[in-house]
Image 1 (cartoon, rainbow, N blue to C red):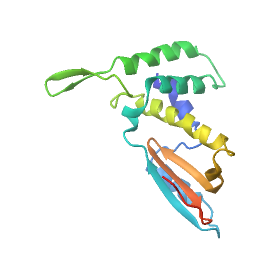
Image 2 (cartoon, rainbow, N blue to C red):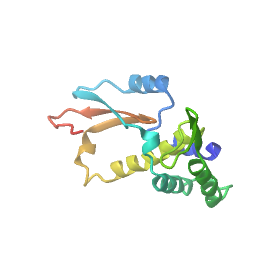
Image 3 (cartoon, one colour):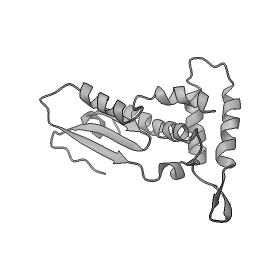
Image 4 (tube, one colour):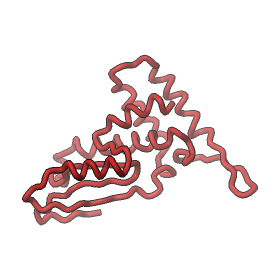
Length: 160
């Protein structure tokens, strides 16, 4: 299933492949006279906090935007549903059924989490009237649960 999700993840505007890609991105930002602050954020326990319904809605949102649809979106969603709802793991001598979030060990969990956060990021960028903070943000990049951006320091307070 990750075969279908990976192209969607890499198409996200905030996509960062790894730390070397992030360094390359930072080096490519031109020097400017404006004062800028490098801001970092982390989503606490992203995988276990991704709600199943929210993730499925995000997957559907991005799957429906595919330029080529050789595979049925509904079929892919049905198969994606099997991963988070069928995750069992061993801890100590006991077996557990994970009932929330995405599985830490699943190959497609990074993609599921990235697409879920990707919908949030699109909503953040599209609502300029409701989010006056966005005008002070540049070079927003994310690697899974780590966000990096520059804040144009014009005397505005960053609230976290």
